[in-house]
Length: 399
Image (tube, rainbow, N blue to C red):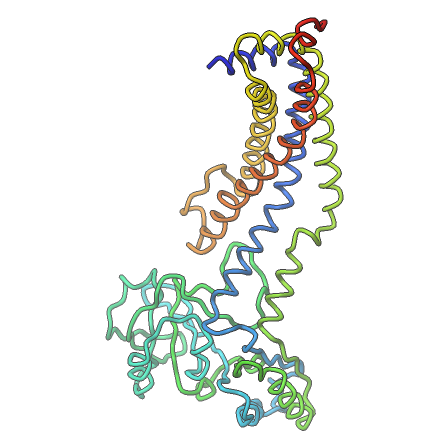
């Protein structure tokens, strides 16, 4: 309480300089938080994608058809079957999307059973085997958010006129990759299955429609390059153009792109941070020197040198931490629309989690660490200077 009154009196002696230091700190923290906000969000998002693979994502590949497969000049089923013959490929298949309008608008993702090992989809082997035995309906499992709307055994009509049958439910935050990763991320999550259906079938190509431009595959550890080489040779024999994309490389590239160290504004942020540190340090030194006599009196009144040092540090801490909080709040309001985010504001629970972790947990923690570093650096020289004086020298100083 005594320290609080002392700091208040010291601040009231220099309101203009305190205001300038606070505004400068707010600006620097706003610039830092603005730059970090997107970088951290993207990093959390790429980590989520990294976690959604049931196996090492470097074992998973995507064959992307560059040539037109809809013209009929390419028998994509035959090409896929030749790819499948490779000794290195352990699973390969198409994806296909249907739509369910009966009672709810939802996507139905039809996937090849051979690719299930690489997806983050919670289907036990017994359930999968029961689904594959169904020859009358398309067997489906229901997303977590839809589990209360459909019972096991329910038959649902699809937009194509076919019917599917519910066999089970997915776990919360189950996910699957499809087509190219990081193809876009606006207000929708591209991979989460909480509001979707998944059908597991023997061969997607048995259906009338499927996306022939993309073929997913996975291999054993260390066999990816060998499989890629064979895939390219087969494609060359058909005289078709393809791209073979490694999922692990996609994720690493995205992580590199989102690294704050690669930001074009990094040097500007460093300069702003250094200017802020230097300004706070100079102003603190100036007023510590002006208030030497005050600190001498405190020393006589049982204030130890350590306690006086902490008093100086506390002054800077109030300014810097307050500036960091204000800057974070402003950026949070402008970036997310509100200081405290709500689940209702986000179309998927996963996006809410990403925003929550990024902007309300990780970013404040990073700003706290940066603020603490600024406080330590800006207080170091003033504390060293004041501790070099003996009590008589402080007492006889002119204010």
